[in-house]
Amino acid sequence: MIAFAWPWLFSVLPLPLLVRLFTAPLEHGRQAALRVPVLDDFALTSGRRQQGAGRRWQLWIALIAWSLLVVATTRPQWLGEPIPLPLDARDLMLAVDLSGSMKERDFIIDQQYIDRLTVTKRVAGDFISRRVGDRIGLILFGEQAYLQTPLTFDRETVRRLLQESAIGLAGGSTAIGDAIGLAIKKLRDKKVESRVLILLTDGANTGGVIQPEKAADLARQIGLKIYTIGIGADRLTMQTLFGSQVINPSRDLNEAALKRIAGTTGGRYFRARNTEELTDIYALLDELEPVAQEAQLYRPVRELYPWPLAAALLLATAVIAAPLLRRADP
Image 1 (cartoon, helix red, strand yellow):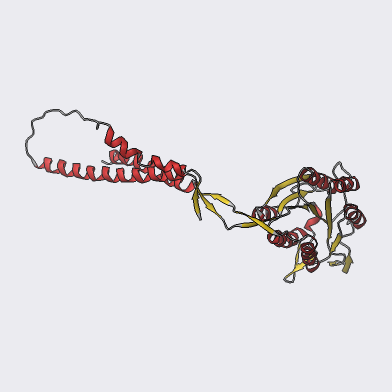
Image 2 (cartoon, one colour):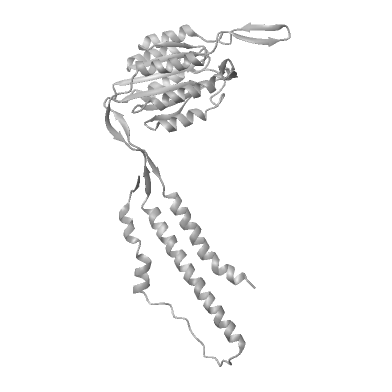
């Protein structure tokens, strides 16, 4: 539905009419002249009639522009569908690895090899959409960790920013400890019953300033539960000059470290070797960290004032430009 943040500003709508009624019209000086009725006078009269009609149209356009400007000033807003908020709030942070190894094409979707980040976007995006009522944040990490989205109920924004992420955006190496440290910084002061970090990576800690084990111990102290997901196939057949060769594309994955991180904080470690396993993991996370019970409603708000404001400016420009165009006509 449409609502107005400042509806009292509609009271200025009749202002031009009041100015018209209570101010004296501007008088144009006239000069006496001896006129001779010739055919040119008829042409002059016709031109004045056309000019008067043009001014009336300008007046109407100006009034419409004023009305649109007043509507924009009242800040019209579109109120979205009510979103249920949980009785016991849950803060859930996603940390996604964007290091160079995430471009490895070892996942299959529709009989095509797809890189790891694309699969992550698809599966994690569906997971975000299901987390109705949770506050969700997004951390992207590579050589450094960045807070892409702070904790918010706006799941669509989090999902869209995840889809816009790109491999190498945060550097080439993998700073797992820094990603956990950033999550701790953003979650430690939140007064909620449940704090959860879901960390997805395909490698080992090769960057950053904080060791993952130290960061996991700090997370345990503030009650932050970490679920770690190791992503990547363990067998991949490649065609070389010497024939088919089977390699392990996940040889750099440090599963032992990810298990220690999860175990220290009371979470769990998961291994996703293909798309089906990754989908099952996020479905299991829904069961381990269920959505809380509904208690109140939240309605997202989208501002609409730019539309009437832009229309008012265009009409005002047309009113100003019309006399100039008539003068330019031969």
